[in-house]
Length: 482
Image (tube, rainbow, N blue to C red; front, side, top):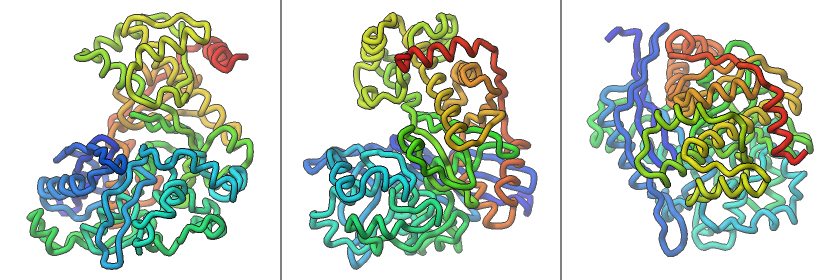
């Protein structure tokens, strides 16, 4: 191997599976390969829904063993959830899953002390019942929290087990609703008013900071030869994915697609207005002082649930048939919480269409077209609203993540937004993880340099809008009841 090329292990953990990818990076080269994938199955026990964090850690170790020699390791995962450690550094039970019911009704208790408007103005985070702030409020009277001497967010917990060192990575910390996005430090006043002990959190780390080296026991179990450093990356997977958006300049929107669609802008400063809160936009922190200003949309979860209901399905053939269905015949609100739960998704979508006076889609192709039109419409509204609220116009929409494989969705998004869509890379979170490690070790330059390398090395597909924006405007108005 060329001495100028180095290898980095990216541990990328999602809500249903985890994988270890190895990226090989040179001054003008970037290759990524999956070496190990493992399930992430939450477990329902008498006290509620929990993560099998020991199973996840075992998967990480297996993946590092399969990775072979690497120059660094980085970990990214989903947001908000955490593990509690006692005074000896031992884990106090399995971490609670963000879909656990313990936060039901908690937000109203928080708002009684800090009104929602004040909370948004201080932290910039949209309301989500599972934000860490609400989880900690729900846990306030528990023995486990009383025993805890340290709280580590999920990627930081696994990093601790790998290295023995504790830290709190900033991009993920910004999803707790306890960070001030202006100072990029803790929102001390909010925490004090709500009785949350910020001393539970380990010191903040930034992407690129050293996070320790693999412990001797980890080296022995994985067969790696030390020292192997662990590097803090954008440990919230969306932060890593946005870092891997292959954009030039700043006049772009992004959509991170998969089970969820996360649509928004990369800004230099947060937008903390009441109008922004009412529009349900969030301000999360990214690399190099950036802010991820975005809205959460239900995403391809809708189609995934339908495919599960239909049984064995040829997805390529289904999408081809859906492309022949008349556009915008029926649409639903892709952000409606009514679609959050699993089960009966085709019927629920048809019922929602009929309830709003539209024809109910019947065949799988019709349901699929309804879903993709609805997602494109939600993408359109999020991109339009973000530009208006931030005063930040864009010329192109970058789509990254698993949804880039869905050419019909990418084309419909271009049509709906009236803007070119550049689709790719598919493995954006893992690539962003790898590139932050490479930058920390001097192989690539700043964020713009990382993105130039992506443009040169990753396959990208461009979709031009085909016109007909008036139809999309009319569908948006119909959905809004105007």
